[in-house]
Structure formats: structure tokens, C-alpha cells
Amino acid sequence: MANNYKNIVVAVDGSKEAEYAFRKALDVSRRNEGSTLHLVNVIDTRSFAAIEAYDRSIAERAQKHAEDLLNSYKKQAEEVGLTNVEIVIEYGSPKTIITREFNKFFKEKKWLKATDENLSGDDIQEGMYVVFNITAPNVAYDAQVKSRITKIEMKSFTQALADNL
Image 1 (cartoon, rainbow, N blue to C red):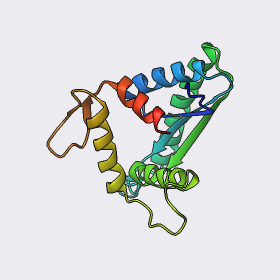
Image 2: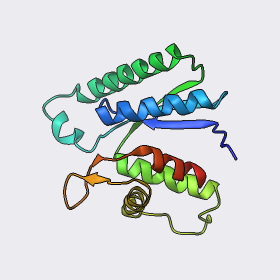
Image 3: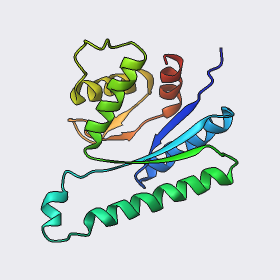
């Protein structure tokens, strides 16, 4: 049974990994007619307090950078024929935002009841490590603490994730 996605979300930050994820999201969007591609960038505000004591324009520059980055990706998406492309800029800790959105999604799917305790950021992070290790052959991390994935074959991961949603 083929999946028909209505919403494709990709988080981008200008890195080569984000570029790769964006390309994959384009492919998925093109295969799912009528879907909406959501381009997301999280402006990490945790360090702003210390920096803004010296440079008050840091938040404005971060906003401008995010807008330019997302508009560039939106233009690329439109050039390949996608018409439903939305830009989302969030502020805060990426881990906190991802955790909030996972909890909201799990409750919408009724995988968590309204009365259940929310999953923590550490729960989500550990769960993603498990998913990567089960579904991605030869996943490699930058250190023993697994703070960053340095190599992953995404096809099997995305297929396993898609099959279970």
C-alpha cells in the first residue's frame, strides 16, 4: 500500500546535511501531489542574552538569515514545480521545540493520551537514536556521547518511519 503524504516537514539550517534532507523532501513532495512542503528553521535563542549585551542586532540578523535561507529553499522548490510551500521560523531551543511538536503529534495520533505525561527531550533523543540504529545500516556518530550523526543512509530510515506513521 502506497502512502499519500499531505504534509512534508524539513528542518534546514544551511548545513550540507540540511541540503541533503531538503533534496529528499523535494522528492517526497513531488511524489505526493497536492502535499504541502513545510520549510522550518529554528533560531536558537539560548545564547542571545549573553551576546545581546554587546550586540543588540543579533536577533534581527538571525531573523534575516533565516528568512533568506528559507526563501532560497522555497524558490528552489517552486522551480521544480511545487506550489504548496510554507515557511516556518521558530524561536527557542531546537530540542525543546522538537519535543513539543513530537508530543503534540503523538497526542493527535492518540499514541499518548491527554492525561499521559509528555515525553522529555531526552526520551525523544534516545528514541531517535534507537530508530537510527535499527533502520540505518552503519550509522556513525561524532563521539561516544552521540551528539551528532556523521554518517547515515536515510532511505531505510525514512521508509521504516513512513511505514509506521
